Image (cartoon, rainbow, N blue to C red):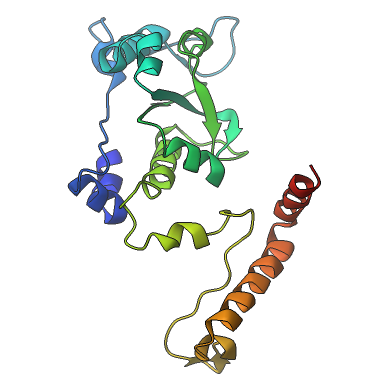
Length: 226
C-alpha cells in the first residue's frame, strides 16, 4: 500500500533526493506464535478484535529503542486514530520540523490502550469518520508533512499561499485559455498589475473562506481578540 504512494510525484522525488526517508515495518514479524497473531478479542466483550500490545512494542523497540530513547533522539510517536486530535495544517508544519516521526497504523477496534500509554503516543485523526485501517491516514499525514520539508516543493512560495496557511482558503486559480466555454478569467489577472492581483486574491480568499469555512474566520477573529 505504501510503496504505490511513495513511488509517485512529489514523494518519489523527495525520496530520490534523500530529503525524505520512509521505512515501513510489519508488526507481524514480531509476533512469536506460529500464526503470527497480532490481535485478540477485547476484554469485557464486544465486537471486533484489538491489536495486541506486545508485537507492536517489540517492533517499536527494534526501530527506535525505548520510549525515553526515542524522545531523546527527537522522535515524535504518533498513532493514527479516529479519537485523536484533528490533523490541521499547523500540525503538519510543526511535525515537519521534527527529526523523526514514528507512525502507528491502527486496525479493527484499535490498539491495546496500555501500549499507547507506555509510549505516550500522540493520537491524530483525519476527521470525524471511520476508515478500515490507519494506513490511508498515515499516508495523508506523510504527504502533508513531506511537502513542507525544505527543498521538496519546486516553488518554496507554494507553501505560504495554500489553503489554511493563514486560516484562510486559497483564492481561485485559473490557467489558459483566457476564455473557456464562454467563461472568462477575471480581467485583473491579465493586467500584470501585481498589487491589484494580490489585492484581488486576498479578497477572493476571504470571500471563499466566508462561504465555505466561516469557522476559520471565527478562529482568526478570536485569535486577534486574545
